[in-house]
Image 1 (cartoon, helix red, strand yellow):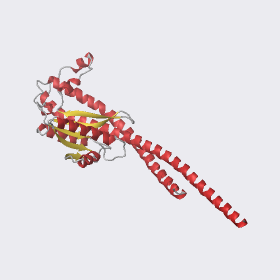
Image 2 (cartoon, helix red, strand yellow; image 1 turned 45 degrees about the vertical axis):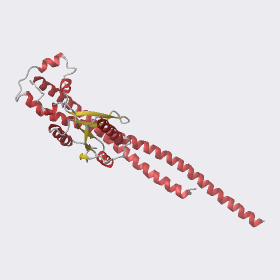
Image 3 (cartoon, helix red, strand yellow; image 1 turned 120 degrees about the vertical axis):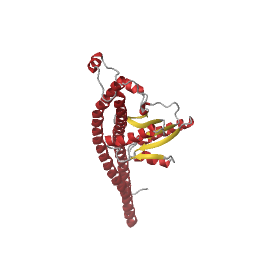
Image 4 (cartoon, rainbow, N blue to C red; image 1 turned 90 degrees about the vertical axis):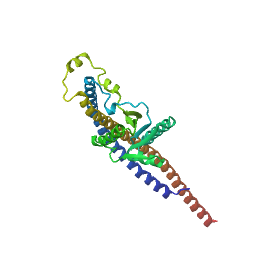
Length: 299
């Protein structure tokens, strides 16, 4: 049976741990608010980019010659890019992305499709290597606060792999932020860029907006402009996924640390009760020893 001193030492340890988890919860909450602001600021830019691409594609005589729009007749190799965090302590945030990515790899393997791994986040890269997967490239060190330059580096590599024919499709797997309590794993094909994306840029456009758009003279040709816009669109989509993943990570960490603090509080209460019982047992034992000693002297 643990002594009062042992229980008191454990209570002190759990109390210190609860201070740490509470501080991490507050830090994650502050980072989450900033991440939400960045996502809200980025969404109008992404919408305008899509509208600009749609208008340019509509003015183009043909878009089938653009490398990022070319659909392969047969998919032989797929690049899977799981987006995770650099650290843990965020509940199932990293595990659910890796679980979905590995399930996708096994499904493609059954179909006879090869897979090439590129990872975003230290946890994703290390977990895949631990499972004996070959990770071609990993980007780390920015998952908490990604910048547009980070998205450009990733998009440039993915576009290079697709344009050169090394892969026939590029799929990203990441956590989409819904709330601090809910993060939904999303699997998206970012390459090739579907022509439906260009058509979607004008969905919901009313007649007044279409009239204001009017006719434009493009210089240079619309095809050349679209060839420049497509890589920027890819960068924008990657950047959006990074921001969604960062917000999801902070939300998951905040929730995990809140649960850890709550569990630590419950553990402290139970340990305190056990310590009081142990102290009472020691006092009772001392009283019994004193009474037994007095009885022995008077006998």
